[in-house]
Length: 582
Image 1 (cartoon, rainbow, N blue to C red):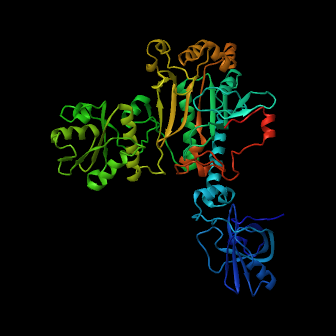
Image 2 (cartoon, rainbow, N blue to C red; image 1 turned 120 degrees about the vertical axis):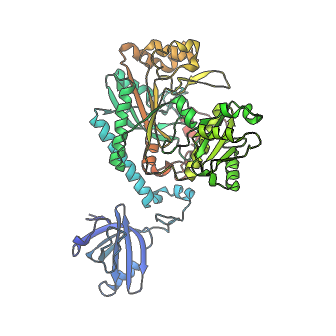
Image 3 (cartoon, one colour; image 1 turned 135 degrees about the vertical axis):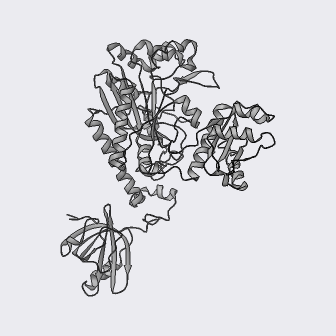
């Protein structure tokens, strides 16, 4: 036995007990006549003491040789700590060591194993196994475990069955690029890693398992950023004999359960907003409703004067920034520069200061009088002391630009509080999106999403107007889950494939197995998938998912710790019937 207690367990009630501890040397303090060692494991830190009066000279000298992160085992007696440390749970006691065994010496770590470390992100990812020893990362992984267990508990209590689906599947067009796996036994053929278990969970509904879930890895070969990984984890769910309302009620319940059990927060309100309304009011389909600054469309009150920038714009839209009238000209110019950055792409910004005396000061005073600007204030909901920020241009681009500005201003103003939670449903998405480059439509969600009841016929006359029987769950400005009621009959699915540009032969080759299954009594069904990585990071009060993943990859999709992806030798290539042409 290496230990009978952990390094976070000992308290004053343990004084005079003999104990056996194991862990890593966190710190060593040598005062000559006494040596203190902080011993650390996953559970906490216990102070060890070696002194001239009570410790043999050999043991004292051995303690002095201990380096950081060396793994040791100690035997000793719990004693009262003379100088107590109230900042840690074990701070009332220490262990007077009688035996010390070095289990494994450590090299000097490349960065300090502290909550506030001197290691940059690159070096910490290279030595991720050391980074995990740090409390922030360790606690995040423990937190993720707690969330996962609560998900399993809730869904199991609701009658859902956890079913595993295959990782080696067939490549199908679902939006992002697939990761491909060559088959040694089937020359020239490839498996794909699943972007989601979509078709399999639908087949489980055909199989009669009317409530399925899986916490499952998914894979997408797409461009990366800080909040996106090539492999990620979904809480994947499907239900049979349900309508949209059944899904929404069930997963409102899951969200409420997680907020209560994990954060101690009671949330009763789950507002619902249509996709069109979300775009008009917030400029995106995952609005953060913890704060205001809703869009005010100004075309009718801004396009009647000789200001051609507005007159030629498809959309003129503004937001009211709380207390923004106090901004200096330098601060406003900085906002203008911010929206003109290539990442945002606006050509400029018009502003109006709503003065405390009821008057207005604008960057376009030459074109608009006080009555005009008062109408702008009314439309945007601006009050005395606020600042109105106005952008104009093509509708979709301008909404995206103002949405980015809204979120940036909320961040600067401290309105995006990590301990506040505001969920909502976004519903009635377009079924199809038009690719402006090709002129073709593609599925906004995926090819198996059902149109809203009664709208199937519109596919022939006005496909862009068809609404999907789809829904996204948004939390604090992030989409944490999305799903739809599925098509469950072969005829409707064939119509959908046709409008997505599939020939009958292509549809048969890609999805014949699903179409065949629909001929054997497929029930009405629908589902949802939560992004576990994103959900956990939001519940943990952070925006970036990497620190909630044990071994994440960088923005180039590389695991710098194990140096993957990597080349393979010619013998392996020959076995897989592959030849490189780089």
